[in-house]
Amino acid sequence: MAQNSAAWVRVVDAIDAGKSPVGTPVTIKGWVRTRRDSKAEGGLSFVAINDGSCFDSVQLVVKGDLPNYASEVAKLSSGCAIEAQGVIVQNPKGGNEVSVELSTGGAIRVIGWVENPDTYPIQPKPHSFEYLREQAHLRVRTNTFGAVARVRHCLAMAIHRFFHERGFYYVHTPIITANDCEGAGQMFRVSTLDSMRPLPRVAKEAQSEEARKHCEDLAAKPAMPPWTYGQVDHTGDFFGKEAHLTVSGQLNVETYCMAMSRVYTFGPTFRAENSNTSRHLAEFWMIEPEIAFADLADDAKLAEEMLKYLFATVLSERADDMKFFSERIEKTASERLKHIIEKPFLRLTYTEGVKILEEVIAKGQKKFEYPVKWGIDLQSEHERFLTEEHFKQPVILTNYPKQIKAFYMRLDDGCEPDRQTVSAMDILVPGIGEIIGGSQREERLDKLDARLEEMKLNKADYWWYRDLRRYGTTPHAGFGLGFERLIQFVTGMQNIRDVIPFPRAPKQAEF
RNA sequence: UCCUCGAUAGCUCAAUGGUAGAGCGGCCCGCUGUUAACGGGCAGGUUGUAGGUUCGAGUCCUACUCGAGGAGCCA
Image (cartoon, rainbow, N blue to C red; front, top):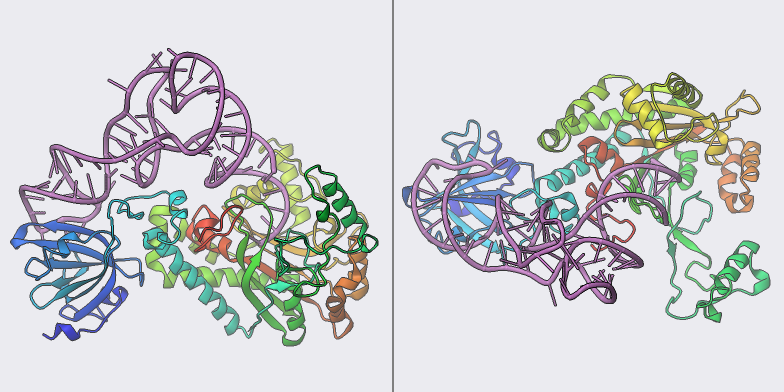
């Protein structure tokens, strides 16, 4: 058999009896997971090799008659990159499992050795996620992170497919923004000014009152050199004004929605908040669809259909990885997704949610650290109670008080004067809390302007956003889905830093 | 940023203020068509950093750095 010309097959195809029946000559390339030796039959080694194409590794059965058996095969350790040529065989005891047998005529070639097996960071034993986070360049070689990477890919593809099949257009909204109007949240500055030299300062009389006060406070500190005084002049900066990394593509994607009807963005988003939690990143990916001629109910329906589509896809396409997550990470991972797909999401207004919380508190069934009162935002503990304990399923909370929501959310019609609400929704899921936040947008210019004024925002800064309401405005709605939170929910991974290849968080940008 | 806890061998963790240990991993030997392999042996340490208390500090005190869980902010 001309094994030297055997086709290179990925492990996923090598272990698939339909594609590689017993007797098929194959070439396998990948990285060694484990090696076990036997002295039987004059030397025999079992080498598990993985190439990331699926969860499972394929076992090479390497016989002692290979010319480099003693010199190389017997010295293989975890992490070595190798190429092997052999024939698919049935495992004697292994049920449906197959191996690739390498004996006379077969070959094994070491492509890359591990220079010191004792200090190779990924040892064939359980490692803590905290430790692996410090080895982010190597951690994808483990079962868990390989599985996360494949699920992440599967979900990303499924998101594009879901929207594409429904006539949505994928819009690339900008990463850099010079709008100072994307809403609350600390932003990262983008600048070409030379921070090693004194930065240019604007004239004192040209400074805003807020900036002047801030600078005076700074200059009052004893160690402050005088040239640091005053507001920075960005007219000489790359964009001629202050620029930042985007915190949301929503405002931009609304413009495309007002011409293409159904659009979505899927891209990186940045928050400079000093958040140190298992649910926050400084750089994360967000999916933001926007639909025209639509209201909040349409928005909620879209979000529910999307989540169910994604869960069904990952269960069928990544059954191998989901089996692993259910066995080793979160016992209910697969069952929970199946359960969610079958039942309609519960819809509940904020007002009804508050009522339920007040009732359980009054009956003494549940104690919370923070008080519940109509008009104040729900705390994590309240949201978690509703979705995890009270309903035990995903909940869509809608129609929040306007004072706790963003300016662009549509004011509900027919509210009591002291209980005005907006057409906002949060989708809460067990274990994660808020996974989606969305709203119907305010399409009426007079109402939008009134909100801008109420929130002391500068109308001029929003000139192009307001233009959308002046030229052919329509009801429209959209939401934001945190991609990493979605992956957390699907896999059961506890920390968001373990579902993105190279997490960015305060004091964390090593890789 | 706030609260709580933590940092000791390659990894996970022990060690009353008094000579730093174990398991796993690594290497060597034995056994075995093995698959979380098994049995025996060997190597491996400036106890996160900088100070302080003490005859003596892994242990007590102070500051800092980094990490974890929770909170806030949110996706």
